[in-house]
Length: 344
Image 1: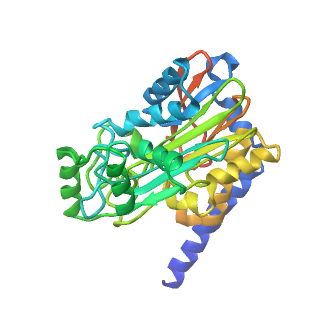
Image 2 (image 1 turned 90 degrees about the vertical axis):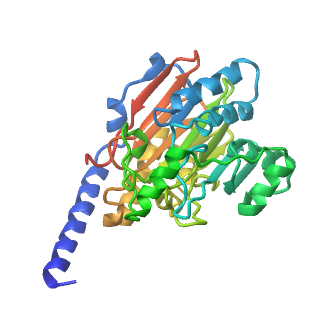
């Protein structure tokens, strides 16, 4: 690095940290106060990431309305995007790794300490359901790779190729340049550019009953064209998802590596345990990531959702564009944009 380049880099980093410091001086709830309040203040029952979370919420709410358990509900919700061939960041038709294999990660968790997860699962439609079987039928909390896939077959889940013609074409087009750079908010792009829209995301879903009990689920096909064997935050308890009885739950979205560095979802719940509101807790972890990483997270999206035992929500992200779906106790769903630390 030349002297001028070094000076420029230092100036850029200093400006980023100065901006973070200035934002940190603002009241934590300022952005939240500008956000819409869905359901006229009614407690939230289901909360999930991205626009496509609305359909997942509907399935989860219907399961609860029919008398299903919280685990039934979050599983049903997560299964919706897993089976959607138009969604290239979750399940069937997910973009593959750089070797052409679609691999899935998922976790399911209740507030009584029940946990099940799978990572690098292949040729199985519903990773969330396999994760539930890990929780209910094994002494373990996570199975990975070949072992996870073998367990799925042993449990009766059919073998099915998840690589659709559209996803395979995107992968082959990507191979021409092999450009490897995550694109923020690619989940909400109508037109996706093969090789540029490196989808890296999840459906993270939290559900709550009227008495404050909670469960959560998180499932993904991971970052498109990732290195084979890469596992992000999604299936890791405390990173992609965390739920605690009497406190609440949190889930994350965006570039998973930045979430795992700080055990993001567990950090959100820990803040709530010490008295922070869900909004304050989401803002705290995003600000911490920005301060910790500086220029390394320039152009990167990371976002968090939180839901407490009383049905109060929080949402915050690094960059504009993160959306989330809120379903109130009457079943009314609203899709909202999360406030962000940076404007662009």
